[in-house]
Amino acid sequence: MFTSLANLAFRAVVGLAVASLALLAQTPHPAKRAPSFTLPDSQTHYYDLLEYRGKPLIIEIMSTICPHCQNLAITLEKVSKHYGDKIAILSVVVPPDDQSKVRQFVLRYGVTHPVLFDCGQMTASYFNATPDNPHIDVPHLFFIDKDGFIRDDFTWAEPPQGQTDDSEINTSIEPLLK
Image (cartoon, rainbow, N blue to C red; front, side, top):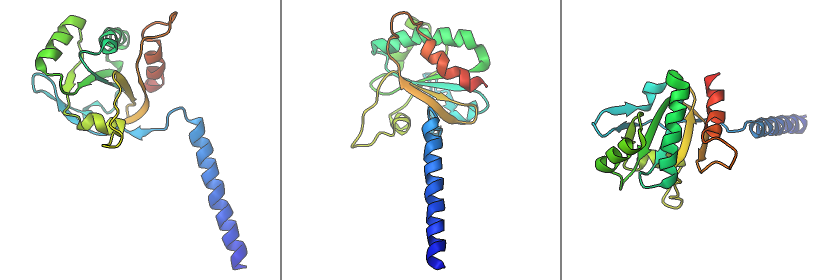
């Protein structure tokens, strides 16, 4: 009797595990709570992730000397104009970028959203970087839903010919607006 109950319980647990894995496999990007942060801009105004609850947010990890980041800055401005106040955008830089480099970048590329300064801890937490795996790709976009969960992320590169610069970004934004 005990053996058959244990066997039945084991089968139930295995069945639930298999069903859970199947459900996860169907999800394009499993939700992960976005790591919290508070970071300053060049005017020492602090931005807290929690202030963006209730609104979709794009977080861009970038570098002012990265050519893809420079092109993405122009694309993100188009995205910002297209969606207006339905979404928020924050860019984050790490050293060696400094206030002077960011100021020049903002002026040159017409950036209107905040550019925040990170010493590396926030960026590392978003990439799950460790001393054994310190790799960080830029520019990298994280798409956070109104409840604070990362719903998509990818390293942005120049789009294939025939696509608009913002098609991949728009594809990630649209589900966040529902």
